[in-house]
Length: 122
Image 1: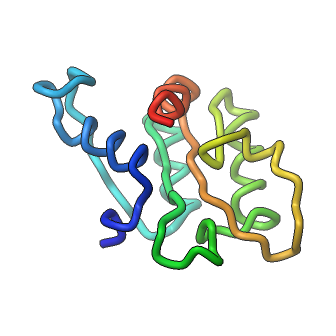
Image 2: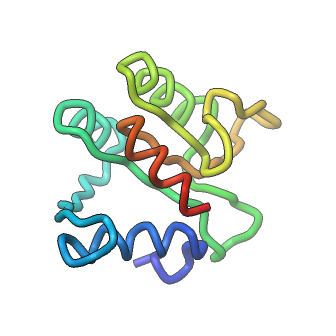
């Protein structure tokens, strides 16, 4: 429902995934959303893929929805320790210096290869 508010690089990445075998990625992707970051990340760790909660243009005062200190960073650490990657779209999530306790950030995490692919859309 927020796709229309996402920034252009995120929209292009998703469009290419949705295009499936006939698109530039050349393969089909499944998309799921459980509405629980922990459950979604667990599934990604077991089956591969990427979890995304990107920034959007809806409210510029909130660059993301998930809080860095107690949502994004802990999951980023788990994902990186498991061999994956985590990014805010511009840098590694674990490199983000907290500016406030409840600071919000965009989150992209999952397989290292897929996060690297996503970052090429920037």
